[in-house]
Length: 486
Image (cartoon, rainbow, N blue to C red; front, top):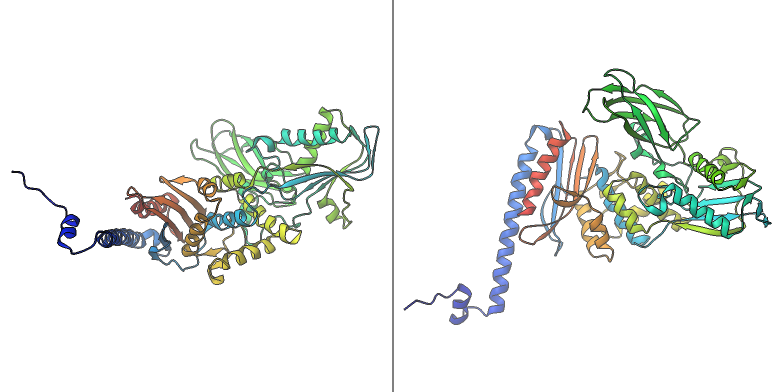
């Protein structure tokens, strides 16, 4: 006769040692504790190997890992050390913006006029007043592309009965401060597309694209075209052609409000090559787009196109419209956050902190936006001394945060109604949903991952002052994070 085999819980039940609910609870608790110990030990082993590598002889690594379900810290090292986060700063900015502004928040651009309209002619000024929309003229959304923006403005004029404008056009970007970039940004970054500033009125994400014609190795690269154009800027071209396959090593220098651009470095030999830089201001290309639209659609304009920048420089009072005739709206904030995180658009981050300030104080400045961000996170448990920041994107080397603070922010995001949109905005690296960050000597990853056993982790890892290649340090960081996949 076949002998019946009883499982351990079954035997315990019949022998009266434990009641099933209590035993099962204890058994599961023991299993989870052992699993947590195993993960923590494996992480500790991998971190030790990483810390002992020559790449980190004079560097530091910080890691914090939490249980997504309970918030318990499962493993940490140097988690309270303030380190430069690079673009992991965007985690703090995104969460605060979604909370304070709302996932369905839309930026607006107002169209208004002063004077009067008679027989399809505006006798007065037309105003285009921005409220910080970072997507105006952007190629990322169908409704924000330059042609679409101009068509929307044309429709507003047509609906108001305006076919001719006998007055000036005022481009008003005064809802944001005159200084378009935060303090602490490197000169090397200001001219590049990722160092673009922001104004109350923006265009094409405030970047231009240069189409280049590489020649023979060692020779000067030709400039074929620029779009949007900045006609008053003079380019000093010191860009050379390098061997094929060497990649983009170009460095454009054109600061805000500047009119002399220097472009240095190399681009690879081969076909046409495109590099992107930051516009010194957005008003000139907006004016050019308007002029062309008016020509194409037979709208007569007899005045000039002026901007809030012009009024500031001339120390004159900026006029305002008397009648509002239409409003352009941006995509919703959750869709803006998607691109902000996926493509790490620094200009969006600076725009968001200024917008939080604008909504609270009427005018958006970096300093007031940073203050709002600091207060917001202090109220959610991050100590003031653990959150020293100067911008909203992480481009500044003056930002210092902790991996513990980043994990707190990610845990908080999980409790919010917009969490799904935030989670989907995180890029996927190494098979994990996480935001990356990179500036000189800094690499960071923060995000979420669900293991093969179905356990979700929240984590943040930052390395500062490493030596050698970025690829090498990233591989070491991946080796650590791979322990969360098991």
